[in-house]
Length: 549
Image 1: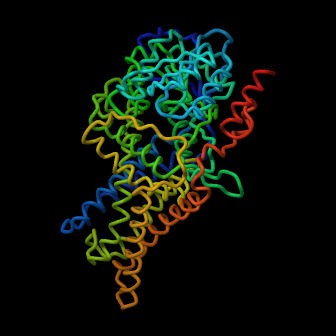
Image 2: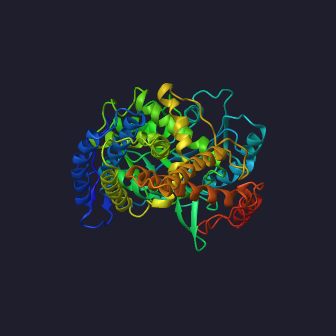
């Protein structure tokens, strides 16, 4: 067994060697895992030196591609350092009636059909005292629903600091020791507290986080094989990265499906404001003050994933702008925040810096097209040698990433969704220029297909890649068999096939009942014993039946 440790203890926790501390069990990994980090890092040093010496500084995309390579090496090493070992907490049962827990449900513009099942689910959680509905929309139907169900209703007439401001306003109306947070669309299981509350017997624990899990697995952000979910866009974060963060006492609060200690929130001034990503920002402040975090890898609440490409873009753009603003502009930046351990600092730098990946992907996509158009390469050596070394080293990086991801990295799926995320990351760059404080709430009842500039732009990128392939083939047919042409053909083909995979899948998804709101067809997980039928009126009727029983 491995025991959780932190570099310091909060000022609110007295040292007591006999007091309970959260224990973590290391998950089984192959014995060769540690060697992979050293092998990749050892090869990265001479590769980077070689790569620095062959840059074609006379063409503008030469240095650009070089910087993309440097970024990829740096972020890969960060990931390998962080993901070397994965841990899960050793379960500790809660003591019935020992702690007072209230639920905070912030809402802004989500419809009643989405919010009411969440409220009903929260009322069913064993051990809950009160449910507080925090309505930034100040809507009559929400007030009426709260009165009908007997929960507290606290609207705001202003929307200062968006979700964080709404949550901080809710703190004024509760004196509970612990607070459970739920997004407006996340319905918890009745045993939520039974699986999370015991860890708070460790007086240094600030929050316990569980995965964000979703009902609508027919969304384009999930891939299926033989009728079952084979992969999802967020699986790597929740199934690999968060358990690995347990090792460093740096797991993130993600805004929902979590329990937080009120004393810890008060210690950092409440939920963090100043960025559009109050969750990671709050986590950083808590860790910097010496508090502990625990990630429990159990699905204990289910919500709604983005139902359209437009909503995916809005959500990921906000994440990107908030994270980059936190990294480069916030006083709490992990580059300079006091109180973080080295491991925690690396975890936060890795998480925020990852939102520049879209820039790297676009560089890799466009550069081969520029090469085949100008017939001027980004490096100044023979392309036969360059291709061999570049492909071998990149292949090693992808293989090691796949191993450290515990199977959650999928070459085709992960890379295609990274390309789909390019535009959101580009939109988020403004977080570097100006801290984005506006919180854009994802719509939960949107149709699958919406008119936007996103899909035409991605098809235009694909046409660009196909043009690169066609021109390469034309030059080859004309007798130009240079390494430059073969290199452009190789990379244009790879990039185009990856992007085409996403666009074809997205098109099939959008054409399947494109006018039907996704939430109207959902079936909740079988684990919900207190819910049956489709998401909506049937859910509410099943809750009513459960109450009668």
